Length: 345
Image (cartoon, rainbow, N blue to C red; front, side, top):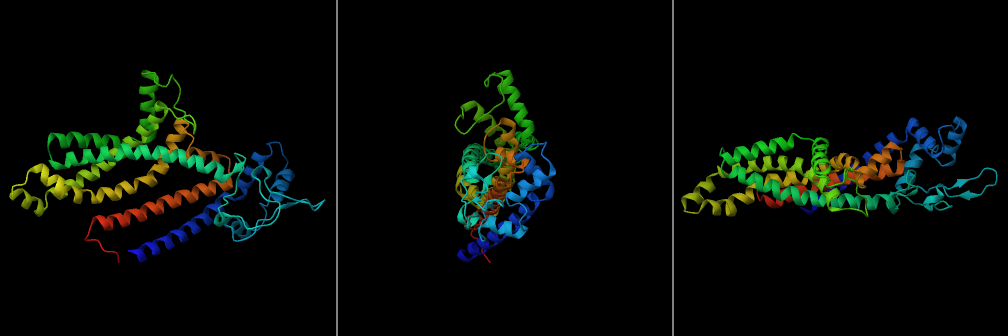
């Protein structure tokens, strides 16, 4: 198991390196650089002014040199005034050094946000904390409710309870976040007036019960149906196994058979599905956070993309890839631990 984890960690590092190179290439295409220069100057700037800004701030260096500087394997060079020869930091508002030094991702320096005028970490860490809080409550609501629905539906296949819960699960799964978000906003904000007629807007320091509940409900309602359907299918399969019949013939009650024998085996498949909800939540928060103006990772990602904030975009891509690969690793390891028949090759 240890060698398997080490191999997967190596693959994760290589994957993150390759994807970061692809993203670095895309965000540094010429139209994106011109857009960045315009956002830092103004729309009336001449082509010479734009080119001068890009040249002064190091965006005209060799592509692989810049990528190496971003990684931290090559030293970052300060700006040098050609008239005076005086070195100055590339972005003064980020407290960048005025001398050449190794300062990149490997050293914990993710660069400078040209949109928010702060170091990337100073903007990204609070955003991740806000999204982490949101995702925690989404999972806290989604997982127990979906497992309960799935187990109840799968215990007695074909019953009225099974049909009712299955229809409800399919309905929620077929409703995307931007639809359920609008529905919840109309019900709770407009009809009930809980939000005083405003769209749910939360900040890192101003989260309230009502404007935090709607994003949680919007994201949880979709995942509940999906996990519940997978749990039901797994429960139905387990309940038809020979050892379940044997336990019933021995005189065990139906509830005892479900709790002691069927439940653990039925939760193996849903465990994998639950772990894979984390990558989905990253895409879900982009829609929900923008819709409700929640100042988290998804909102920050959209702002960075809209303003071609190169360093912030690269940091967001690394976080996304890391979450996806990490959850896949945890899913594989957890599946092997839950199912003794699985052996790591």
